[in-house]
Length: 217
Image (cartoon, rainbow, N blue to C red; front, side):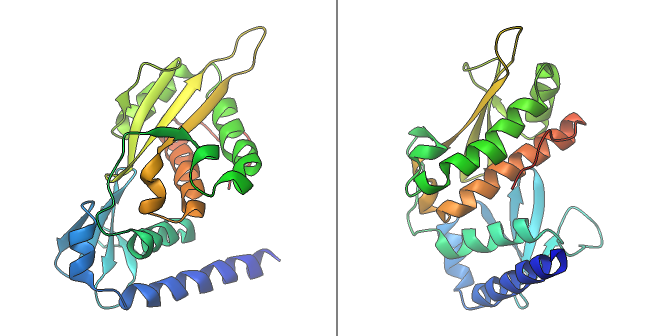
């Protein structure tokens, strides 16, 4: 079962890799300010790690490694391909911040987002506020006045995400929320916002040196 699941994800990545090759790459560079021309690659930074999409093959590699190792994460590859495919011309941030449930067309996924992103986020960093702050700063986060720890972190430079956390006490468990600019679906498909959030939680936990509490997408 697990092998079939992984195989299906890989097939989907191959499908999007082929779709990428059908795009006008010069137009991509114009419409996506987060993308840069690095010779044979189109480069983009995702949670402080640089990836390159090969212009001729569509393969995604990690540019942070001298050997340019292929990116093995299906989720990251899917997010990069979807950014290229779904981003609209002249898309721009509105500075209108909303919780996931208020993102356009996100309502069917709200319960799963709470269960598989927000609840693990809160549980992972309960009584670990200092580690969360340290991790957020490492990911380029800018502090916000909300919560015991609130940071605006660039997933992509064109897609900032706000991670908000309130620590627990004797009466209440820790709580967390993740906000998106309302324009996020002008850059990516609504389902991609889910994995953008879960990848952010993964990167925060990695930088904090904490295992994620619970199961995420």
